[in-house]
Image (cartoon, rainbow, N blue to C red):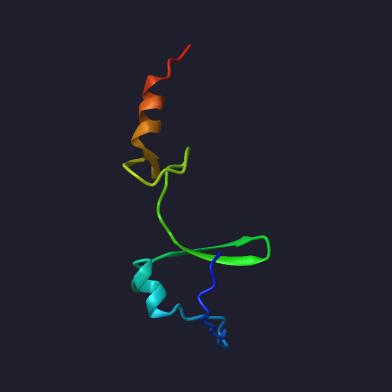
Amino acid sequence: MKSTGIIRRVDELGRVVIPIEIRNQFNIVEKDPIEIYVDGSSIVLKKFEPNCIFCGNTKKLLPYNNKLICSKCAKKIGDLKSE
């Protein structure tokens, strides 16, 4: 990971402000969902992108039973033969 040299304090409600330069760089706007996860001893913030429940792809997603499936996985499922 690359250090930005920007330091922010956590406020009394546990919030941290993401600097405008970083929000612009990643096209993060007000009300965008942000994914928070831990990687070893690091806390990682990532702009949330919906993805395929099978392969994790974020392109060409199709809704199916309130889940998202990419077109490649949908084709593979369509190619399955029942015995």
